[in-house]
Image (cartoon, rainbow, N blue to C red; front, top):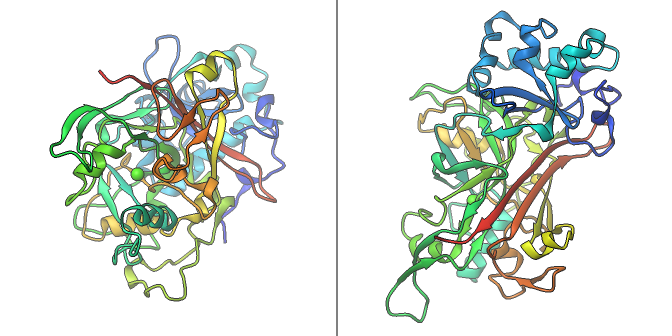
Amino acid sequence: MPNLDKTHDPTLKCWVESANEPDCDFSIQNLPFGIYRHNNVGMQVGVAIGNSILDVDGAIEAEVLKVPDEVSTDFCLGSLNEIMEHEPSVRRTIRLAISELLREGNADLRDNTDLRKSLIIPIGQVEMELPAWIGDYTDFYASIYHATNVGKMFRPDNPLLPNYKNLPVGYHGRAGSIVVSGTSIVRPNGQTKADDADLPSFGPCRLLDYELEMGFFIGCGNAQGKRITMSEARDHIFGMCILNDWSARDIQKWEYQPLGPFNAKNFATSISPWIVTLDALEPFRVEQLQRGDDDPKLLEYITPTENMGYDIIVEVHISSKQMRDASTEPMRISKGNFTDMYWSIAQMLVHHTSTGCNMNPGDLLASGTISGTAEDSRGCLLERTWRGQNPISLPDGTERKFLQDGDEVIIKAFCEREGAARIGFGECRGIIEPAN
Ligand code: CA
Protein backbone atom coordinates (compact mmCIF):
# COMPACT_ATOMS: atom_id res chain seq x y z
CA MET A 1 0.00 0.00 0.00
CA PRO A 2 1.25 3.51 -0.75
CA ASN A 3 2.50 5.51 2.26
CA LEU A 4 0.46 8.65 1.97
CA ASP A 5 0.56 11.66 4.28
CA LYS A 6 -0.80 15.20 4.39
CA THR A 7 1.53 16.29 1.55
CA HIS A 8 -0.36 14.03 -0.90
CA ASP A 9 -3.86 15.29 0.00
CA PRO A 10 -5.43 16.09 -3.41
CA THR A 11 -7.52 18.88 -1.89
CA LEU A 12 -4.44 20.92 -0.84
CA LYS A 13 -4.17 24.30 -2.55
CA CYS A 14 -1.21 26.65 -2.79
CA TRP A 15 -1.06 30.44 -2.46
CA VAL A 16 1.05 30.48 -5.63
CA GLU A 17 -2.06 30.51 -7.82
CA SER A 18 -0.50 28.93 -10.92
CA ALA A 19 0.18 25.74 -8.91
CA ASN A 20 -3.57 25.15 -8.65
CA GLU A 21 -4.23 25.00 -12.42
CA PRO A 22 -5.58 21.53 -13.30
CA ASP A 23 -2.86 20.81 -15.89
CA CYS A 24 0.03 22.15 -13.82
CA ASP A 25 3.04 19.83 -13.48
CA PHE A 26 4.32 21.50 -10.34
CA SER A 27 1.34 21.31 -8.01
CA ILE A 28 1.78 21.56 -4.24
CA GLN A 29 1.59 17.75 -4.08
CA ASN A 30 4.74 17.52 -6.26
CA LEU A 31 7.51 19.78 -4.87
CA PRO A 32 10.39 18.59 -7.11
CA PHE A 33 13.96 19.71 -6.42
CA GLY A 34 16.31 21.37 -8.89
CA ILE A 35 19.36 23.61 -9.14
CA TYR A 36 19.07 27.06 -10.72
CA ARG A 37 20.96 30.28 -11.32
CA HIS A 38 19.31 33.67 -10.94
CA ASN A 39 20.76 37.19 -11.22
CA ASN A 40 24.30 35.84 -11.59
CA VAL A 41 24.23 34.37 -8.11
CA GLY A 42 25.86 30.90 -7.91
CA MET A 43 23.90 27.67 -8.10
CA GLN A 44 20.97 27.44 -5.72
CA VAL A 45 18.55 24.75 -4.56
CA GLY A 46 14.97 25.39 -5.64
CA VAL A 47 11.62 23.68 -5.47
CA ALA A 48 9.29 24.16 -8.44
CA ILE A 49 5.83 25.43 -7.56
CA GLY A 50 3.40 26.38 -10.33
CA ASN A 51 5.25 28.65 -12.75
CA SER A 52 7.74 29.69 -10.06
CA ILE A 53 10.62 28.47 -7.93
CA LEU A 54 10.95 28.62 -4.16
CA ASP A 55 14.48 29.64 -3.10
CA VAL A 56 14.88 26.97 -0.42
CA ASP A 57 18.08 28.24 1.17
CA GLY A 58 16.71 31.78 1.23
CA ALA A 59 13.56 30.53 2.96
CA ILE A 60 15.65 28.72 5.60
CA GLU A 61 17.81 31.81 6.17
CA ALA A 62 14.73 34.01 6.52
CA GLU A 63 13.42 31.46 9.03
CA VAL A 64 10.09 30.97 7.27
CA LEU A 65 11.11 27.39 6.43
CA LYS A 66 12.16 25.18 9.33
CA VAL A 67 14.17 22.07 8.51
CA PRO A 68 16.02 19.67 10.83
CA ASP A 69 19.33 21.15 12.11
CA GLU A 70 21.35 18.36 10.50
CA VAL A 71 20.27 19.46 7.01
CA SER A 72 20.00 23.23 7.35
CA THR A 73 23.46 23.90 5.88
CA ASP A 74 23.04 21.41 3.01
CA PHE A 75 20.88 23.76 0.99
CA CYS A 76 23.57 26.36 0.33
CA LEU A 77 26.01 23.99 -1.43
CA GLY A 78 24.68 24.38 -4.97
CA SER A 79 23.93 20.71 -5.61
CA LEU A 80 21.46 18.19 -4.28
CA ASN A 81 23.99 15.47 -3.42
CA GLU A 82 24.16 16.31 0.28
CA ILE A 83 20.37 16.49 0.55
CA MET A 84 19.96 13.18 -1.27
CA GLU A 85 22.24 11.47 1.23
CA HIS A 86 19.85 11.77 4.18
CA GLU A 87 17.57 9.06 5.53
CA PRO A 88 14.11 8.94 3.92
CA SER A 89 12.52 10.15 7.18
CA VAL A 90 14.60 13.37 7.04
CA ARG A 91 13.70 13.89 3.39
CA ARG A 92 10.02 13.47 4.27
CA THR A 93 10.33 16.03 7.09
CA ILE A 94 11.78 18.56 4.61
CA ARG A 95 8.97 17.84 2.14
CA LEU A 96 6.33 18.34 4.82
CA ALA A 97 7.88 21.66 5.93
CA ILE A 98 7.92 22.98 2.34
CA SER A 99 4.35 21.79 1.77
CA GLU A 100 3.19 23.60 4.92
CA LEU A 101 4.96 26.84 3.95
CA LEU A 102 3.25 26.93 0.55
CA ARG A 103 -0.26 25.94 1.65
CA GLU A 104 -3.08 28.35 0.93
CA GLY A 105 -3.78 29.16 4.58
CA ASN A 106 -0.14 29.79 5.63
CA ALA A 107 0.56 33.53 5.78
CA ASP A 108 4.25 33.35 6.89
CA LEU A 109 5.67 33.98 3.44
CA ARG A 110 2.46 34.68 1.53
CA ASP A 111 1.79 37.99 3.30
CA ASN A 112 5.39 39.19 3.53
CA THR A 113 5.46 40.95 0.15
CA ASP A 114 9.16 41.83 -0.01
CA LEU A 115 10.34 38.45 1.17
CA ARG A 116 7.90 36.67 -1.12
CA LYS A 117 9.20 38.63 -4.11
CA SER A 118 12.77 37.61 -3.35
CA LEU A 119 12.03 33.94 -2.58
CA ILE A 120 9.37 33.08 -5.19
CA ILE A 121 11.04 33.54 -8.57
CA PRO A 122 9.33 33.08 -11.96
CA ILE A 123 10.79 29.98 -13.67
CA GLY A 124 11.25 32.04 -16.84
CA GLN A 125 13.85 34.22 -15.11
CA VAL A 126 16.23 31.44 -14.12
CA GLU A 127 18.66 29.15 -15.83
CA MET A 128 18.43 25.51 -14.79
CA GLU A 129 21.55 23.44 -14.14
CA LEU A 130 22.13 19.72 -13.62
CA PRO A 131 20.42 18.88 -10.33
CA ALA A 132 23.34 16.93 -8.87
CA TRP A 133 26.97 16.12 -9.34
CA ILE A 134 26.64 12.76 -11.10
CA GLY A 135 29.56 10.50 -10.26
CA ASP A 136 28.35 7.43 -12.12
CA TYR A 137 25.69 6.72 -14.70
CA THR A 138 24.25 3.34 -15.73
CA ASP A 139 21.66 2.70 -18.40
CA PHE A 140 19.41 -0.38 -18.35
CA TYR A 141 17.26 -2.09 -20.99
CA ALA A 142 14.21 -2.81 -18.88
CA SER A 143 11.34 -2.71 -21.41
CA ILE A 144 10.67 -6.17 -22.77
CA TYR A 145 8.71 -4.63 -25.65
CA HIS A 146 11.66 -2.47 -26.66
CA ALA A 147 14.11 -5.35 -26.30
CA THR A 148 11.81 -7.62 -28.34
CA ASN A 149 11.27 -5.05 -31.11
CA VAL A 150 14.96 -4.25 -31.47
CA GLY A 151 15.87 -7.93 -31.17
CA LYS A 152 13.39 -8.79 -33.95
CA MET A 153 15.10 -6.43 -36.39
CA PHE A 154 18.42 -8.18 -35.96
CA ARG A 155 17.35 -11.73 -34.99
CA PRO A 156 13.79 -12.34 -36.29
CA ASP A 157 13.64 -15.90 -34.96
CA ASN A 158 15.18 -15.22 -31.58
CA PRO A 159 14.55 -11.62 -30.51
CA LEU A 160 15.24 -11.95 -26.78
CA LEU A 161 18.59 -13.21 -25.60
CA PRO A 162 18.46 -16.05 -23.02
CA ASN A 163 19.38 -13.86 -20.03
CA TYR A 164 16.70 -11.21 -20.61
CA LYS A 165 13.99 -12.57 -18.28
CA ASN A 166 16.50 -13.50 -15.58
CA LEU A 167 18.34 -10.25 -14.97
CA PRO A 168 18.01 -6.56 -15.87
CA VAL A 169 20.64 -5.94 -18.56
CA GLY A 170 22.57 -2.67 -18.41
CA TYR A 171 25.80 -0.95 -19.39
CA HIS A 172 27.93 1.68 -17.71
CA GLY A 173 27.33 5.02 -19.40
CA ARG A 174 29.24 8.29 -19.50
CA ALA A 175 28.39 10.56 -16.53
CA GLY A 176 30.45 13.52 -17.80
CA SER A 177 28.41 14.01 -20.99
CA ILE A 178 25.04 14.24 -19.24
CA VAL A 179 23.49 17.65 -19.93
CA VAL A 180 20.45 19.48 -18.67
CA SER A 181 17.34 19.96 -20.83
CA GLY A 182 17.70 22.80 -23.32
CA THR A 183 21.34 22.08 -24.13
CA SER A 184 21.91 21.65 -27.89
CA ILE A 185 23.22 18.30 -29.07
CA VAL A 186 25.95 18.29 -31.72
CA ARG A 187 25.48 15.46 -34.19
CA PRO A 188 28.28 12.99 -33.48
CA ASN A 189 30.90 11.88 -35.96
CA GLY A 190 31.84 8.25 -35.93
CA GLN A 191 33.04 5.13 -37.66
CA THR A 192 30.37 3.22 -39.53
CA LYS A 193 30.28 0.46 -42.09
CA ALA A 194 27.53 -0.10 -44.62
CA ASP A 195 26.53 -3.73 -45.17
CA ASP A 196 27.67 -3.62 -48.81
CA ALA A 197 30.91 -1.69 -48.19
CA ASP A 198 34.29 -3.37 -47.99
CA LEU A 199 35.72 -0.87 -45.55
CA PRO A 200 34.35 1.32 -42.76
CA SER A 201 34.26 5.10 -43.11
CA PHE A 202 34.32 8.10 -40.76
CA GLY A 203 31.87 10.99 -40.79
CA PRO A 204 28.68 12.50 -39.33
CA CYS A 205 26.17 10.00 -37.93
CA ARG A 206 23.33 9.46 -40.40
CA LEU A 207 20.95 7.52 -38.16
CA LEU A 208 20.65 9.76 -35.10
CA ASP A 209 17.91 8.77 -32.66
CA TYR A 210 16.47 9.63 -29.24
CA GLU A 211 15.53 7.15 -26.53
CA LEU A 212 12.62 7.99 -24.23
CA GLU A 213 13.62 6.93 -20.71
CA MET A 214 13.17 7.73 -17.05
CA GLY A 215 16.24 8.27 -14.89
CA PHE A 216 16.42 7.69 -11.14
CA PHE A 217 18.84 9.28 -8.72
CA ILE A 218 20.41 7.42 -5.83
CA GLY A 219 19.79 8.92 -2.38
CA CYS A 220 21.79 7.33 0.38
CA GLY A 221 24.32 4.92 -1.13
CA ASN A 222 25.80 1.60 -0.03
CA ALA A 223 29.33 0.77 1.06
CA GLN A 224 31.44 -1.20 -1.40
CA GLY A 225 30.99 -4.90 -0.67
CA LYS A 226 27.55 -4.43 0.88
CA ARG A 227 24.61 -5.03 -1.41
CA ILE A 228 21.16 -3.41 -1.34
CA THR A 229 18.22 -5.80 -0.89
CA MET A 230 14.79 -5.60 -2.50
CA SER A 231 13.13 -4.45 0.74
CA GLU A 232 15.73 -1.67 1.13
CA ALA A 233 15.80 -0.49 -2.48
CA ARG A 234 13.10 2.18 -2.34
CA ASP A 235 14.80 3.95 0.57
CA HIS A 236 17.97 4.30 -1.52
CA ILE A 237 16.26 6.06 -4.44
CA PHE A 238 15.82 9.83 -4.10
CA GLY A 239 13.65 10.53 -7.11
CA MET A 240 13.16 10.42 -10.84
CA CYS A 241 13.63 12.62 -13.91
CA ILE A 242 13.05 12.37 -17.68
CA LEU A 243 16.06 11.13 -19.63
CA ASN A 244 16.90 11.11 -23.34
CA ASP A 245 19.64 8.64 -24.27
CA TRP A 246 20.67 10.10 -27.65
CA SER A 247 21.79 7.21 -29.84
CA ALA A 248 23.81 6.97 -33.06
CA ARG A 249 22.31 3.84 -34.63
CA ASP A 250 24.82 3.49 -37.50
CA ILE A 251 27.78 3.81 -35.14
CA GLN A 252 26.09 1.40 -32.72
CA LYS A 253 25.51 -1.23 -35.39
CA TRP A 254 29.18 -1.46 -36.30
CA GLU A 255 30.71 -1.17 -32.83
CA TYR A 256 28.33 -2.94 -30.42
CA GLN A 257 29.70 -6.47 -30.56
CA PRO A 258 31.12 -7.83 -28.33
CA LEU A 259 31.12 -5.23 -25.52
CA GLY A 260 27.92 -3.24 -26.14
CA PRO A 261 27.36 0.48 -26.74
CA PHE A 262 30.34 2.84 -26.64
CA ASN A 263 30.63 5.84 -28.98
CA ALA A 264 27.02 5.34 -30.11
CA LYS A 265 25.91 6.64 -26.72
CA ASN A 266 28.75 8.56 -25.09
CA PHE A 267 28.41 11.97 -26.78
CA ALA A 268 25.35 13.21 -24.85
CA THR A 269 22.51 12.24 -22.55
CA SER A 270 19.86 14.85 -21.65
CA ILE A 271 17.88 14.98 -18.42
CA SER A 272 15.01 17.16 -17.22
CA PRO A 273 16.09 19.64 -14.52
CA TRP A 274 13.56 18.73 -11.83
CA ILE A 275 13.82 15.61 -9.69
CA VAL A 276 10.40 14.37 -8.64
CA THR A 277 10.93 12.55 -5.36
CA LEU A 278 9.76 8.99 -4.78
CA ASP A 279 7.73 10.48 -1.92
CA ALA A 280 5.81 12.65 -4.39
CA LEU A 281 5.33 9.61 -6.64
CA GLU A 282 3.89 7.48 -3.84
CA PRO A 283 0.21 7.85 -4.94
CA PHE A 284 1.30 6.51 -8.35
CA ARG A 285 3.23 3.46 -7.11
CA VAL A 286 1.38 0.43 -8.51
CA GLU A 287 1.91 -3.21 -9.34
CA GLN A 288 4.62 -3.74 -11.94
CA LEU A 289 4.05 -5.56 -15.23
CA GLN A 290 3.03 -9.18 -14.65
CA ARG A 291 5.60 -11.75 -15.68
CA GLY A 292 4.31 -14.29 -18.20
CA ASP A 293 3.23 -17.75 -17.01
CA ASP A 294 6.12 -19.32 -18.88
CA ASP A 295 8.75 -16.84 -17.67
CA PRO A 296 11.52 -18.32 -15.52
CA LYS A 297 11.11 -18.09 -11.75
CA LEU A 298 13.08 -15.18 -10.40
CA LEU A 299 16.03 -15.79 -8.13
CA GLU A 300 15.28 -14.80 -4.55
CA TYR A 301 17.58 -11.72 -4.38
CA ILE A 302 15.63 -10.01 -7.16
CA THR A 303 12.09 -11.12 -6.29
CA PRO A 304 9.75 -8.15 -5.60
CA THR A 305 8.77 -7.56 -1.97
CA GLU A 306 6.33 -4.72 -2.70
CA ASN A 307 4.69 -2.93 -5.63
CA MET A 308 7.36 -1.06 -7.58
CA GLY A 309 5.62 -0.10 -10.79
CA TYR A 310 5.11 3.65 -11.33
CA ASP A 311 2.14 4.93 -13.29
CA ILE A 312 3.90 7.64 -15.30
CA ILE A 313 2.63 8.74 -18.72
CA VAL A 314 5.48 9.54 -21.09
CA GLU A 315 5.32 11.38 -24.42
CA VAL A 316 7.70 12.33 -27.20
CA HIS A 317 7.07 15.44 -29.29
CA ILE A 318 9.13 16.63 -32.22
CA SER A 319 9.48 19.92 -34.08
CA SER A 320 11.64 20.74 -37.07
CA LYS A 321 13.29 24.13 -37.55
CA GLN A 322 10.75 24.84 -40.30
CA MET A 323 7.90 24.08 -37.91
CA ARG A 324 9.31 26.42 -35.26
CA ASP A 325 9.85 29.16 -37.85
CA ALA A 326 6.19 28.79 -38.89
CA SER A 327 5.09 28.70 -35.23
CA THR A 328 3.66 25.19 -35.73
CA GLU A 329 3.14 23.29 -32.48
CA PRO A 330 5.46 20.33 -31.95
CA MET A 331 3.91 17.04 -33.05
CA ARG A 332 3.43 14.21 -30.56
CA ILE A 333 4.90 11.06 -32.02
CA SER A 334 4.59 8.65 -29.13
CA LYS A 335 2.81 8.09 -25.85
CA GLY A 336 3.55 5.29 -23.42
CA ASN A 337 3.51 4.38 -19.75
CA PHE A 338 6.30 3.47 -17.37
CA THR A 339 4.17 0.58 -16.06
CA ASP A 340 5.11 -1.27 -19.27
CA MET A 341 8.62 -1.94 -17.93
CA TYR A 342 9.51 -5.59 -17.33
CA TRP A 343 12.03 -4.74 -14.60
CA SER A 344 11.34 -2.27 -11.76
CA ILE A 345 13.74 0.43 -10.59
CA ALA A 346 14.17 -1.60 -7.39
CA GLN A 347 15.23 -4.69 -9.35
CA MET A 348 17.67 -2.62 -11.42
CA LEU A 349 19.29 -1.12 -8.32
CA VAL A 350 19.41 -4.43 -6.44
CA HIS A 351 20.92 -6.28 -9.37
CA HIS A 352 23.47 -3.49 -9.95
CA THR A 353 24.67 -3.66 -6.33
CA SER A 354 24.36 -7.45 -6.02
CA THR A 355 28.10 -7.80 -6.57
CA GLY A 356 28.81 -5.29 -3.81
CA CYS A 357 29.15 -2.45 -6.33
CA ASN A 358 28.84 0.79 -4.39
CA MET A 359 26.36 3.59 -5.14
CA ASN A 360 26.86 7.19 -4.10
CA PRO A 361 24.31 9.97 -3.61
CA GLY A 362 23.67 11.56 -6.99
CA ASP A 363 24.53 8.50 -9.06
CA LEU A 364 22.09 8.21 -11.94
CA LEU A 365 20.48 5.02 -13.25
CA ALA A 366 18.20 4.98 -16.26
CA SER A 367 15.46 2.60 -17.28
CA GLY A 368 16.20 2.02 -20.94
CA THR A 369 13.80 2.94 -23.73
CA ILE A 370 10.17 2.86 -22.61
CA SER A 371 8.05 1.06 -25.19
CA GLY A 372 4.65 -0.58 -24.89
CA THR A 373 2.70 -2.91 -27.14
CA ALA A 374 1.03 -0.23 -29.30
CA GLU A 375 2.93 1.13 -32.31
CA ASP A 376 2.62 4.71 -31.08
CA SER A 377 3.99 3.76 -27.65
CA ARG A 378 7.42 2.91 -29.03
CA GLY A 379 10.06 5.08 -27.42
CA CYS A 380 12.64 5.64 -30.17
CA LEU A 381 12.65 6.25 -33.93
CA LEU A 382 14.42 2.95 -34.64
CA GLU A 383 11.28 1.16 -33.44
CA ARG A 384 8.74 3.88 -34.26
CA THR A 385 9.74 3.92 -37.97
CA TRP A 386 10.91 0.29 -37.91
CA ARG A 387 14.47 1.13 -38.99
CA GLY A 388 13.19 3.81 -41.36
CA GLN A 389 10.73 1.56 -43.24
CA ASN A 390 7.69 3.53 -42.00
CA PRO A 391 8.70 7.20 -41.90
CA ILE A 392 6.72 9.69 -39.83
CA SER A 393 5.11 12.60 -41.70
CA LEU A 394 5.61 15.98 -40.02
CA PRO A 395 3.24 18.96 -40.40
CA ASP A 396 5.88 20.82 -42.46
CA GLY A 397 5.51 18.22 -45.24
CA THR A 398 8.80 16.45 -44.56
CA GLU A 399 9.32 12.87 -43.35
CA ARG A 400 11.47 11.50 -40.58
CA LYS A 401 13.19 8.14 -40.45
CA PHE A 402 15.83 9.47 -38.05
CA LEU A 403 16.62 12.94 -36.64
CA GLN A 404 17.75 15.77 -38.90
CA ASP A 405 19.76 18.87 -37.99
CA GLY A 406 17.50 21.49 -36.43
CA ASP A 407 15.03 18.93 -35.07
CA GLU A 408 13.99 19.43 -31.49
CA VAL A 409 12.96 16.44 -29.36
CA ILE A 410 10.71 17.26 -26.39
CA ILE A 411 9.94 14.53 -23.87
CA LYS A 412 7.21 15.05 -21.29
CA ALA A 413 6.18 12.89 -18.35
CA PHE A 414 3.35 13.25 -15.87
CA CYS A 415 1.14 11.28 -13.49
CA GLU A 416 -2.65 11.42 -13.47
CA ARG A 417 -4.69 9.04 -11.40
CA GLU A 418 -8.14 8.93 -9.80
CA GLY A 419 -7.98 10.17 -6.22
CA ALA A 420 -4.60 11.91 -6.56
CA ALA A 421 -3.51 15.38 -7.62
CA ARG A 422 -1.72 15.58 -10.97
CA ILE A 423 2.04 15.89 -10.80
CA GLY A 424 4.49 16.22 -13.68
CA PHE A 425 8.18 16.14 -14.50
CA GLY A 426 8.21 19.14 -16.83
CA GLU A 427 10.14 18.60 -20.06
CA CYS A 428 13.42 17.33 -21.42
CA ARG A 429 14.39 19.17 -24.61
CA GLY A 430 17.27 19.15 -27.05
CA ILE A 431 17.88 20.56 -30.55
CA ILE A 432 20.22 18.79 -32.98
CA GLU A 433 23.09 20.91 -34.31
CA PRO A 434 25.14 19.97 -37.36
CA ALA A 435 28.25 17.83 -36.91
CA ASN A 436 31.57 19.65 -36.90
CA1 CA B 1 19.17 3.55 -23.65
